[in-house]
Image (cartoon, rainbow, N blue to C red):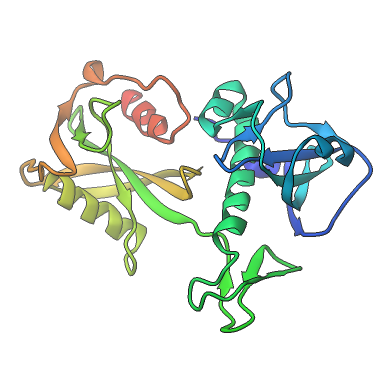
Length: 267
């Protein structure tokens, strides 16, 4: 898992109408949430004239990346565009800033009209915020917190077969945080709902931006406490305890899932 801070090479900022004639980074995103890369599979570091080859819908300055101005550009184009999963395989560092670009792009597209009253929203100049001039509601980027958990019992790890994921035979327990509950509440509830057991001694392992589409994944490990495995045969089809030798390591380490697996395998 790539776990460097996005702020090692990036300084956060936001402006609607900032331009420069100097070379800048342009994160060019199309309606399929794909990001344009050059023939060398890099983010374009170019002057703004480079954008003339695209049909540009909107553009925002989002800060300084590697000591250069950085912009998100929404376009109606195809060609050298890559999905975020593909970009991670090319360069995890590029994936990280590209993920932010896609989320900024999503925010603006999804909140051009107020979800409360339907009025056209207005961009606020000091922050990344679309505000409704009618009812006053502010629309910031939406991030949905989720949890993923490695459950230990002696020298085994609990893994489950999910009905919605046919690509992976067995995976870890995971789910979204419900309104009104803490992250820790969500861990206990998801485990009880999905496999019917109780856990103890929660330990936080880390978090990860997960732009598929807009989550923050929080990773935990926990110890088995009590109960027998009981699945609902709806979301979870099967679940059982795995030894280290039985665990199938994922092909890509894009997900914080691998951090949990590595933690278990190292013990």
